[in-house]
Length: 96
Image (tube, rainbow, N blue to C red; front, side):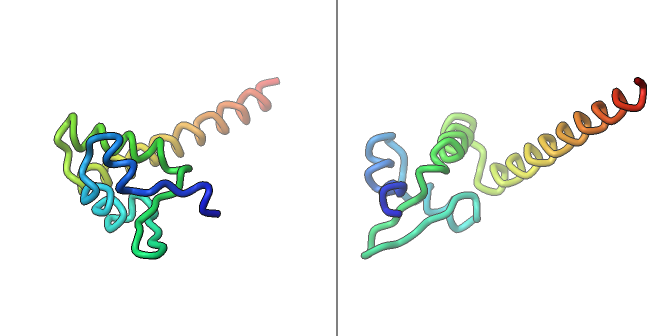
């Protein structure tokens, strides 16, 4: 299991970001943080999300609450797009 975990401090040093930012994301429920032997980790599966959040925070100056709102809205958009595709497929089926 530890193979798919990334050490937060190592990641932050490599990417020139503050570890506190990643910890704030964890506190806000935006990423999962695991502490093992006083070292904080995040799952490698969340690397893409963390990169998106980093861009929003550092490049666009969006705070953690704003990032959470954007994440929520993007999830809703994706769900609605999936629903539209499902309805379009059903409509095609009944038009035959």
